[in-house]
Length: 160
Image 1 (cartoon, rainbow, N blue to C red):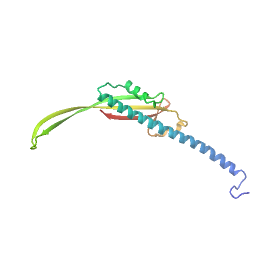
Image 2: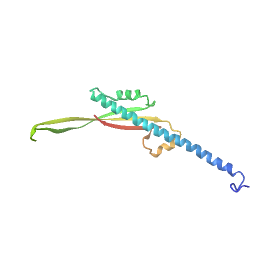
Image 3: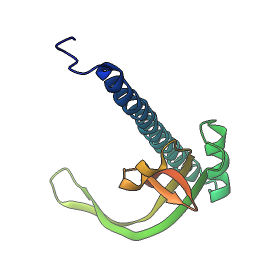
Image 4: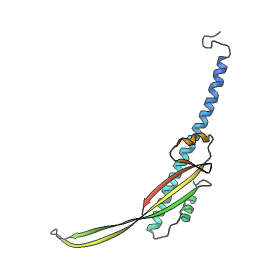
């Protein structure tokens, strides 16, 4: 008998205990990478869509949820079953006074300027197909469960 294995067949028993653990660990790593990939994809799509909405808005073109979804789908990264929501909100108008000074430092002209502010928020939700759904319930950032489906999400706000 070997000193490393006091009873016959111990190596086989150890092997049979370690292999299933490694197998499950492999699937957990795959699930974690799926969550990370889907979350970063949702973040990138949300950021790109918010930037596009701001560009359209500055070009005085109307932006709504349907056009934001169409733009996000054109990127080719949006998974089937994903949703893109566009929310607009008006912020209080900013008012400030612009003073033009003369060469001697006295106020030459004062003018009130009123600035309208608008903020858009783009929310992207993408479905994830988990191998081990039990791991998604622990509150990882960027995932939540809707109607039995796990979703990666990102919310991007941008001032117009």
